[in-house]
Every structure is written in structure tokens, then in C-alpha cells.
Image (cartoon, rainbow, N blue to C red; front, top):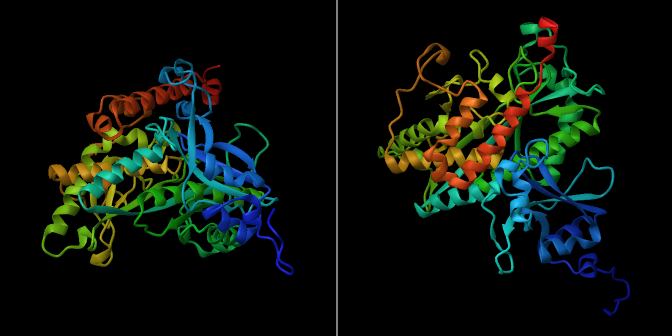
Length: 466
């Protein structure tokens, strides 16, 4: 038993037997009542467990056991038999380990709660196991390693759009935004008055970002009623940037609920207004140097062009990752500020890949297809793999578009989920990037999801035909 020094308080971290990050947390905030371990599944739905705060150290020492088949659940949390990773495997447990730097307090919780992001490993006889190939975070890690082998490090940032809604007790009721939706007249882009109207909840979101160390930058009011956007700073850490996007969505949802509101990242919650997008900015840093795209010797321009070419060439194959939901295809329509073709351009928000204005040292590509509900790790893995493909194969993009991209010819993006699933399932690019098993399993899950929506008779059908 450790002797007590008179006049000195006992160290709570030492009493719990925790070290490293867990010890730092306990020293700063005390022992939490509960720790939420968070594992984003294939649909980016957070799965996990509540663990008593006094068992905090066990997460780092022993890991967290969760079935490997968690990545074979559909968006509703049901097993998809066609994946063949459930009963066929005995439904074995994987071992999940904490992601460094993600143990943070949950400021919107009513009790002292901590949260930590975890990632899956498959037991192989070693202490930690090997990375589980079906975990999207591990898929992104594999792509990042390919860049490292070429002496490059992705520098990325996410922008997330969302709606604030009035909560409803009626299941399936149409959403009601915090501002009345009265047709096109309600568009109010960049309105300071809309920010002022919801200043309390938006300030609490920013304060929660500070508490959790999320690098939030700009907050703007978007064009639609009750729609806002939060931007994250660029990060020379692709995995960390995608982690931040996952945790930012949870933060926005949690703070909104604390204020009696509902936040949604649904791609197209209102038929007559813009959908919610997830825009991703990416540049490539040379080891020991600066931004590859900013080089003045012509190499930068060529690299930028080839990276864009690779993104465009792989875009149709990867659309199912960028637009993973049945609802998401309603967002990709002309006039919506969402792209409808595999196109690119300079300072043009109507194309799929935009080169924003700015100083040369900040040259980057902005990917504008993904819906806000998409999985940040999978989206970023597909974007970066496309860029790398373009660099390695010297893929030249079509001419950049100017003006209204909706009125110009370009390779059309998949018009609906069925076309996207078929293209994904047959793609060599997807097999090379994610593996044939992942391609088969992801396609099987999305076919099941599509079938579920097709079994439902819409209210408009009853209204019209009954």
C-alpha cells in the first residue's frame, strides 16, 4: 500500500493504475463516470460500449472486444447475410484499441462522460493483433502508407453541412427546419442574421470543439432554411482529419440535442432546397519540403493536373462511397450546387473537383461530391487513391470547365443507387484500392439497403393511385 504524504492529495491516475493518455485525462478532468468507446461502422454509424470510468485503464491495457462482423451491419444495424462474415465465421470478436489523441470529455453530457475513438484489429496471436481489413480507418491507413512510400503526405480538411430542425414526435414526419421553408424566397446565403438567431447553439458547438481539441474554423449560414456549415482546418494527418470529421458530426448532434434541436447530415432532407455536402480539400506535402502542387518548376502544375485526372477517372467507380445512401442521389441534381458530372475547374463551385483561389503555397483540390452522411475515412481513402492513381499513371483530365457546368458536357455521375452499386461491384479501381473482399462485402450491403427502400410504397403512390 502506498504511503500518503501529509498535505498532499492522492494522485487519481496512480490510484486507477492508468498511464499515458488516460493518466493525462484523469489528471486534467478527474475520473469520469463513464467512458464511451466509439467505433464507426461501414455506414459511419457509431457503435461501441459504455465502460465504467474506474476501468478506463483497461481500454489501453487490454483493448475492447467487439465482433469483427460489426462491419457487416446495414445502416439500420441489422446483419447482412450476403456479406458472409456473421454466422459463417462463428461471429468472432475483434480487439479494438484507442486512437491516440481522441480521449476527450463530452461537454454536452449531463454526467461526467469521456469518449474515445477506437479502431479494430483481428487477433493473430500477437499482443495487439493485425489491422482488420474491413475497418474503414484501416483502409485509409493503407492508402496513406502508399503515399509515404512515394515521399508524400496528404494534407486534408473537411467541410460539413447540416440542417438544424425542430424535433418531431411523429416517426417519418417531414422535417421542419428552424426557419420556415417558403420556397426559393427563403434562400439566405451567408446571412449574419441566421447566425445571430442561433448564436447560442453555434457558440456552444464552437466551445465544445475547443474542449475536444477539434480544429474548427469557419461557421457559415448556408443557402437553405436552417442549414449551416462548419469547416475544419487543414491537417497534415489524413487519419486524424477523418477522425475529426466523425467526431465533429457527433458533437454537432449532441450539442443540438442539448438545445432541444435536431441536427441532421441527411444528404437531401428538403426536396426544394440544397442538400448537405461533405467537401474535402487535399494537397500533397513532400517529405522535407512544401506543397507539391505549389512547385514553380512546372512539376506542381503537372502534379495538380494528374491528381485531378485520377480523381475524375475513378469518380464513377467510387460514387457509391461518396453517395452511400438511397436519399443521397436526390442531392446530385442541376442547380443544387452539387455536381452532376465528373468535371473540374478553377474557382468553380459547380464542378466535381474545384481548384480554389488562393496563394500558390496553398494550392489544393476540393472534392465536392460526397454527401454529409458519407463515411469520412472511406471518402478520403477513395479520393486519395484516385489522386495517387493519377500521379502514378500520368492521367490527363479533360479541359477545366468555366461558367455553368450544368450546361456543359461531361461524364455524368451515377444517376441512382442501382447504377452506382453495379459500377462499384465491377470496378478494378475499387478492387485495387480496397481489396476484392471489401468490394464484394460493401456492394452486398448496399444492394440489401437498396432492396429495402424498393419494398416501401411511398405516400405519394397511395395519394395518386389508391
